[in-house]
Amino acid sequence: MEKVNSLSSRTRNNWILDAGLFASGVIAILSGIYFLFIPSGGYQGGRNPWYGVTVLFERETWEWLHTWIGLAMVVIALAHLLIHWKWVVGMLKRLTSRQGSGLNTNGRYNLALNVSIALCFFICAVSGIYFLIFGSSEGGRNLDPMILFSRGVWDVVHTWSSILFIAAALLHFSIHWGWVTKVTRKIFGVKVQNSNNTIEVVKKENKMFKKAFGIGLLVIVVGLLAFGGITRTFAASETFAGDEGYGNRFGGRDGTAGYGTSADHSSGTYALDSLPVGTLDQAEKDALLYMYEEEKLARDIYALFADLWDKPMFANISSAEQTHMDSVAALLKRYDLPVPGMDISGTYSNSDLQGLYDELSAKGSASLADALLVGGAIEELDILDLRERLELTNQTDIQTVFQNLLSGSYNHLNAFSSVFLVETGAIYTPQYMSQTDFNAVITEGIQTSGGYGSGTNSGNCYGGGGRGRR
Image (tube, rainbow, N blue to C red; front, side, top):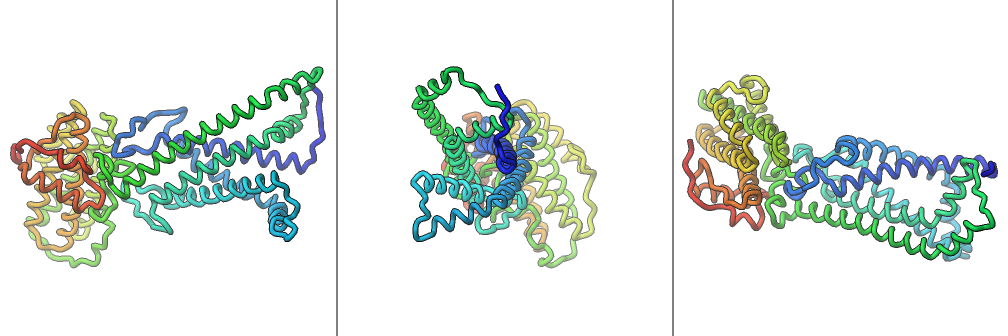
C-alpha cells in the first residue's frame, strides 16, 4: 500500500460532514427500526410478545439514542444543506431553464432521488420534532394538541416517511458506492495495489452477481421495513376505529385501558373551576376520603402486578388510576380536606381498605389468571362504591368527577374480563355484581367509550352467576 494525498480540503471536509451524517443516520435508523418492531407496551392491547425484550440496550437507551442522535442528524443535515446551497440553487435553475440545462437521464434520476431523500427526511424530521416537543400520550394523560393532525396520524406519517427515507438512502448509497470507497481510501491515505489487475478482473466478472445481490438485499430490507410499517399503521388504525379483539378497543397501541378519550376525563383536566362550590355534609366528605384511598388501592395493586406479570396493561392501568387519585385530590383541595394517609404503596388510613389490599394483593400474586380476576374485582367494587356515593351528593363537581371515574372503571372492567377470556379460555364471572348488572355495565362501557371495550368478542365474554357483593 502507498500513501496518496490527492484530495482537496473541500472534498475532505465534505467527506467528514457526510461521515457524520452517515454515522448519526445509522444510529437513528437502527433505533427507529427497534421501535418499529418492538413497539411500546400493550401494542394491540397487550399482545406484544416482544415487549420488554432487551436488544443490546434497554428500551430507555434506545429512546435516548433515537431522540438525540436523530436531532444531531437533523443539525448535520442542515449544515450539509447550507454548505451545498449554491449547488442546490444552481441545479434548480438548470432544471427549470428553457434548454433543460443539459441534464442527461442519469443526472435527472439522481436529482429525483436526492429530492426524494430530502423530502422524506424533512417530513421525518418535522414529525420527529413534533414528538420531541409534545411527547407521547402517556396513557391519555398528555392531551393531544391536534396540530394539523392527531397524534396517531403524526405517528403514521413519521413511520412511513422514515421507511421511504431509509429505502431512498440505501438506493442512493448503493449507486454511489464506488465514489464512497474511492474517496474513503484517499481520506485514510491508502491505495490498494492490484497485482496484474487481478482484482479488477474479478470485479468485472462478479459485477452482475454483485448487482443482483445488492438489489435482492435492498428488496428484503425494504420489504421488512414495509411489513413493520404496515403492522404499526394497522395498530394505529385500530386505535382510531376499534375494529375487534380484546386489546383493540380498550387501550389502543400502548395498552392504556382507555384514557384520554371523551368517555374518560378522569385526569382532572376538565374545568372544575367553572362548577359551583357547595357546602359538604359529613357523608360527602367521607365519600371523597374513601374514594381517594380506593383509587390508591387500585393503583398500588396494579403496580405490584406489573412487576410480577408480563402484562403491560397492569402498569398502564396503574398510571390511569393515578389520574383518578389526582381527580379526587383536586376535589379534596377544593373543599379544604386533607389527603388521607401517606402516599406509601400498600398503606391506607381506612382499615377496611387495608384488609382488602392485603387479601387481593396476595391472591393476585399467585398467578396471572388470579391477578386478572383481582383486577376485575377491584373495578366491580369501584363501580358499586361510586354508584353508592353518587346517591349521597347533589354537588355538581363531585358528580362530574365520580361519573368520569365510573366511565373509567367500566372500561377497566371490560379490559380485565376480556383479557381473562383470552389468557385462560374461561368466561369471566362477576365477583361482586349480579350477572345482569355486569352485562349492563359492559354494554354501557362499549357504547360510551368511543373506542374501548373488547370489540366483537364482547358479547361472548360473560356467563355464570355473580356471588354478590362482599
